[in-house]
Image (tube, rainbow, N blue to C red; front, top):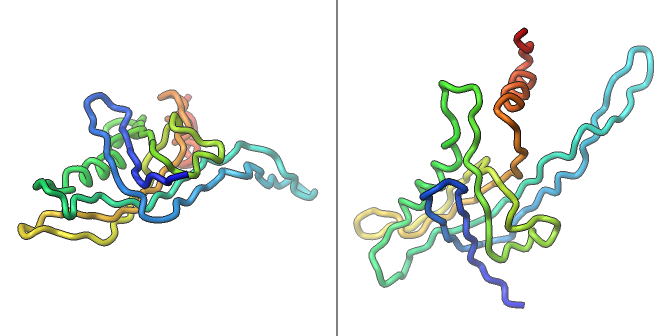
Amino acid sequence: MIYDPNVRITALLPGRPRLSLKLIGQEKFGSGAGGWKEVGRNLREPILVWTARPLRTLGLPLRFDRYGATYEETVDGDARSLEDWSSSGYRPDREHNPPTLVRVSGNVRSFATSMSASTKWVITALEWGEFITDGRGARIQQDVTVTLTEYGSATPAGYAAALREALGEDNPS
């Protein structure tokens, strides 16, 4: 089997571009195993209870690459799009801030371990690496490690309640 190093990341928003990158290393897949939580009990031993399976993660070492291309094009716009998708859901004036959902396609080997191309992801971290610029200083090659987390959907009310719980706030009556 020939391994295709091309990975495509598509934002699930109308009119957004699809980004094509090269896979430049081994992807790292977090299976989301576990979900057990220790619960203390007064004057007794704690017990383990199942809360939920943790969300899965996928780390992809990628490269935007126009180096050696016969046409004049930089990777700055694609890198900016990726960065925007990692934070575009945040608005300080709203309690419910849904993230930008993305899909990943291409021959990423981790999908053989129960993930599929239809899995919805959220970009949770970007680690920018080495880059090459052209004579004008524009980037024509940029390495980035993209960390994706499986999307766990929630209604606006459910999201707000989960946020209040995580922050230790009481539910309004």
